Length: 92
Image 1 (cartoon, rainbow, N blue to C red):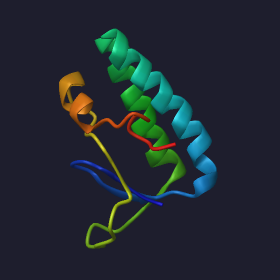
Image 2 (image 1 turned 90 degrees about the vertical axis):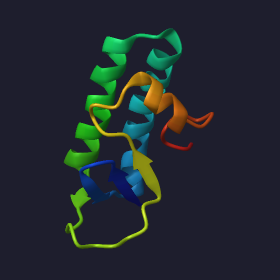
Image 3 (image 1 turned 30 degrees about the vertical axis):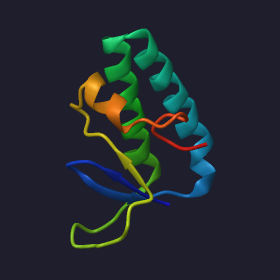
């Protein structure tokens, strides 16, 4: 799966990594619902760091369609709320 972090680039991730990412996504959704801004930013950072750590970065000139788009690390809680589905940022 190709994942884009807004303002940074794209990473190719194996499906086997999505259990870990979904756990972080669930935590992020819970923090958003409770209005925990500090927890939200901490977990968003951890989620994006996991993408960078587990994925293989694509070259800047690659034009692959992103199957998943994640917010930039400095995105506000309100901005991320607009991106959410019922499943969080990561479907499933």
